[in-house]
Image (tube, rainbow over all chains, first blue to last red):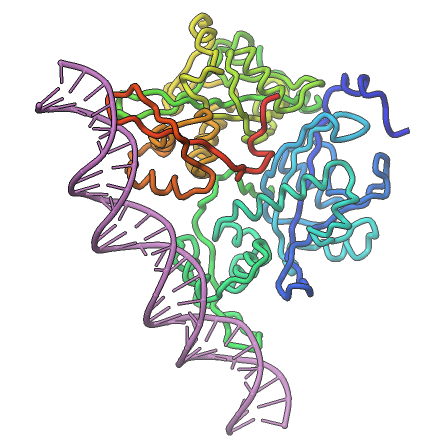
Length: 242
Length: 242
DNA sequence: CCTAGTTAGTGTCATCTTGACCAGAACTAA
DNA sequence: TTAGTTCTGGTCAAGATGACACTAACTAGG
């Protein structure tokens, strides 16, 4: 009996939880570009047992919000992103059928081939963790709690509040090619961008500087590697994982 | 003895609270333009008794986050802004010296002469509520808890994430002149803007349309009144007060 | 070793946007 | 009637942007 009496439930003090929305770029056969994917975990308990949900859990008394989010993400999925950013605090009364829960949601973009991204091994072994296309209606339609709502908001934020430079720095590593940055933007905005013009605008920003290194190995002219400098974003908006 | 044992305190479950940062435009003699002011309440209890703090209080079990913020703001200051937007959730372990508190902070811009703004009467009578210049170092330096930090983050957000149209709509009423919108931007960005150019960019946005009315009464040519249409912002980012 | 294929990177041009500023329009106050 | 004020429409030059042509530099396959 997952549903308790509403009036009774509302007298409990609100519980605090943290969740994470992790976007990753993966090849998308349909468009030929990269697309956005995200990891979900299958719920093993009521409510919503068996359904997919965002990684998350209760806020421990000794964890900062960020630490709680990062630790929970690591424990449930094996993912260790470099940065987590606060997305929003969701606190509606009816978010959970059992009790009042206020969830503070963090989000990040990670690279599929990130060395930090030890998740691959965990994800492969654990049938209760898997990646899905972020906009797959089939997936979005069957999520636990209000997680569909949360993901859709995260996608909206991604597309509307993107800044050149900072977002790329978080997703890509120390050094990156301009084409890699462009891939990020093409995936987020879901449209092709002119390589030449993209290069021009990116090189005109002060936060990205070129290095002397090149990335060889492709079947074409080796592209120059760039580095991200500067901190346009507010400290609060891209906290470092401790 | 406001400080209890740290190790002991940290075992308590985190408490949930809401706070509000309300910016208002007031004439500033120094610059000749409008400046940003905000209301603070004097703490009547420990910790930080006697010091100024942001309006706020605990989250009741029956209130949504937004309602809790709006109700608390009304009760402590008399202010009833049309919109509140979620700013950030602050949850560091040492925010409060007594116990662990996670504060979800809402913010808004209000008009000094807003009819909704019944706060004037309350503020005049109550010596524990007052408006201050948002950037007065004297004030910022003596705030309770981490409220200085919160206000500085709100100011940063205001200056960096401003969009034409939406912000003006929230601050100004149904109908407004373009000069009023310009005043908002001049106060927020703290610099003078060219009236003609500002008019041009604003008129080119689809969300603002002209009306047939004019505002008479000034000692100059009556300016045309405009109306805000459209909803560029995500629903989550400008919730209506219920 | 040569050539085709692929992406990197440069340059150009027309168009759109932006900032600075001028000048007339339309009101109030005296 | 005139001075003072802001509103409002306009011009112009400089800067940013989008479309696209073209060269550079690598790999792969013959």
